[in-house]
Image (cartoon, rainbow, N blue to C red; front, top):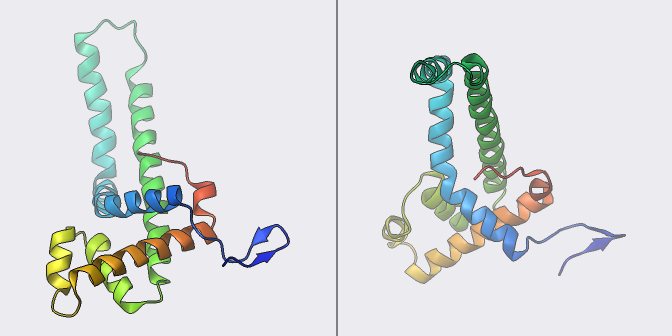
Length: 163
């Protein structure tokens, strides 16, 4: 039951669309972290590759097209924007994960999504302590907990979708 204070919900619950969006982002979590790490480690090289790539493209085409430096700058800015979006998403997911109350759900979501193991690997890992159906239920509970926390934090209102 949701408590209401005036028109604002005190403890909002994520709707099905928000839960599905959360599952999508959880599924992309390790990929986003990898791409962010790569961007952080290689940003100067990425900028140079963009300029060099534009220069090589311009050699083969007539020079009446847009300025290669401007095109490269747009590409680098797009990469930087995607990096910032991924950083926002992963930080919010980690914050919401940290607030999962059930230790089994928290551990299952950590293993499945934050560490990036497959559903089958997750079932095998937790099989000694829980049944497969319990593990699936814990993952689902964790997904819903994260979605509810993201909703409470206003994530879905400020989310500028990248995918």
